[in-house]
Length: 120
Image 1 (cartoon, rainbow, N blue to C red):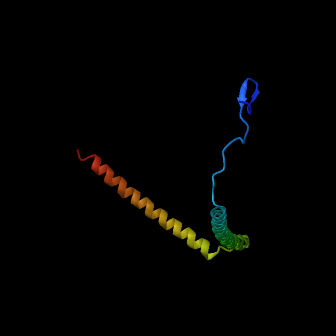
Image 2: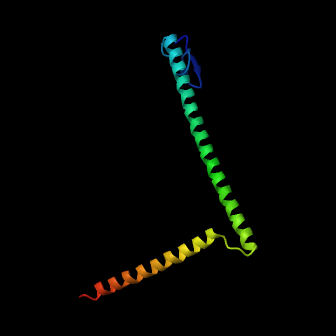
Image 3: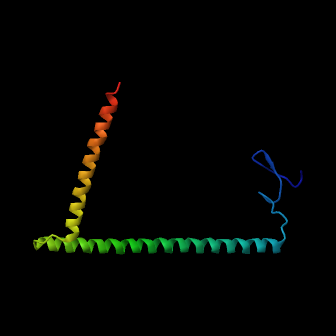
């Protein structure tokens, strides 16, 4: 107890505090560090590839939207001049045709359900 110090009523032993380092071979530690660095670089490369693909897909989407916007602008300019573009006519006739099909199918479905409900 001659090497110990008494501080605040507690006995303290001299020496290092905390965990003692394990006896690891320096070469193994260095190789492990190199392997970790290689893996980190590989992950970084994959992350950058993913981000580049994401950016290119977004750029393609932007180009498609710009083309669509330009088409709508041309349609609007044509309608301002009193012309109805053929694309709009096709859309309108297609919608009217699909609406008439939906209405006719609704009536037949409603008739079938009424007939089924009155069967008992």
